[in-house]
Image (cartoon, rainbow, N blue to C red; front, side, top):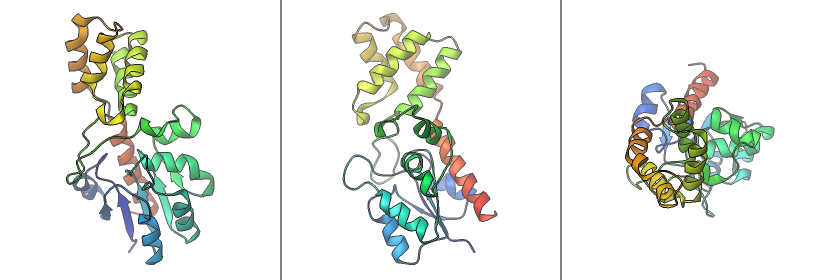
Length: 218
């Protein structure tokens, strides 16, 4: 039987992931998690979806390369997985999803595009990732809720915020305060963005699960 370990919980719950793939699900990957797996003989496949960002606890490139050299198939997408796959696909890491492609192609560059703050016990996200803001604003333009200029202004407002503070309401209110968006449009725009979010991180997390199933022959 193929041994599979997947690091997730924030972008995709263990319950939902487990209903799609029988695997060992673990919290967002951090420094040395993969080294520990390799030291124990390593699973056949490691899936990296979520991970710790912005400090020395982040999973190191050399850990992933070591796992690949040890014969472990490493698949990444969505969040930390997308970022590391874009950096290590030439070493054999398999990247999937739109966010991976955006990093690979230079459409987005900053780590904080995918970063969120999350509840330490439930792993539930407590902020909105910038990549979701991008896709949701794009949808709002297509639906005629806002125009492209307003979308650009709103995205810049979201980008300027510290990632744990990002929310659709805060993004719009900041834009109104700066005179970028008319105040009388504030509530309708917030309502649309919250109730019509395009969760590209969840979509890509599901693609990681599907790719692992394909590789495992399931």
